[in-house]
Length: 87
View 1 (cartoon, rainbow, N blue to C red):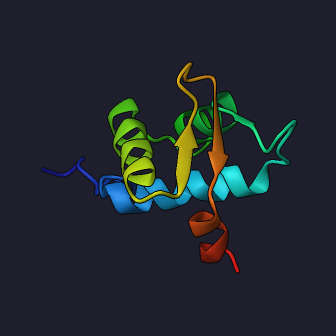
View 2: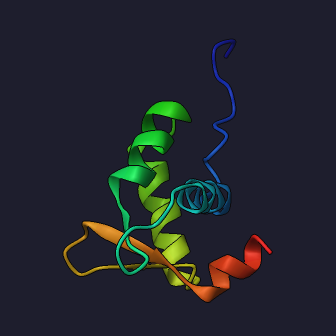
C-alpha cells in the first residue's frame, strides 16, 4: 500500500510521554491542576493523534503513576514520578 504511514503515537508509551510533555509545558493552576483540554487539544489537533491513541496514552500515564486524574475527569495533576522524567 502506497498511502500508509506509521502513526507516531501508535505506541501507547510514546503517546503517554507526549501527553506528559504537553502537561509539563502548561503552567498548573490552583493546587497543581491542569485542565484536561490543555492535554487533549494539542495532542488531537496539533500532533494529529487519534482519539484511540490519546486514550491509550492517558490510560498508560495513569497506570504508571505519572498523572492523577480527578474523579470528574475535568483535570489532571502531575505526580512526583512525572517530575522525575523531566529532571
